[in-house]
Image 1 (cartoon, one colour):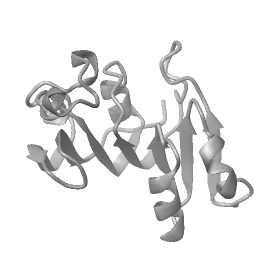
Image 2: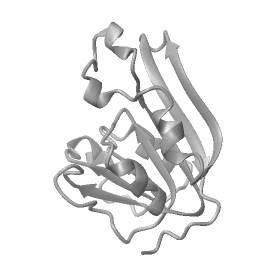
Image 3: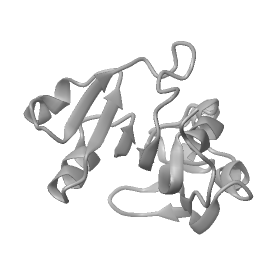
Image 4: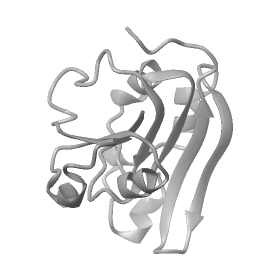
Length: 155
């Protein structure tokens, strides 16, 4: 089971479903997922991810995908939600992005090395990057891919 956290309009949910994965698509607004309603392998959950305790406590996932979303209190909770051998893919905007306009509030921009600091030592980091990119539009992003080498996610 894959978690698409803060899935937005469901771009990753659709792709993962097309590959045959079972997934849970979570966001505060799931109106863009109407075409996925009724798909047997997709669970759509409308949740305010920032309105209290971690709403997915007790659920374990084989993979977690997070893009263009940052709520720092969730960073360690994602480790606990990842089953052994599970993969975390996280990508969002980082410091330096304020030069490009969209998403310039420092509260929503990762500090240099922040994803690496959050997950190195608790997960095996497969890839990490903090870089400026020109396409599809100018941005500064941080991304990490990491594997859980043994922590249980069934608490």
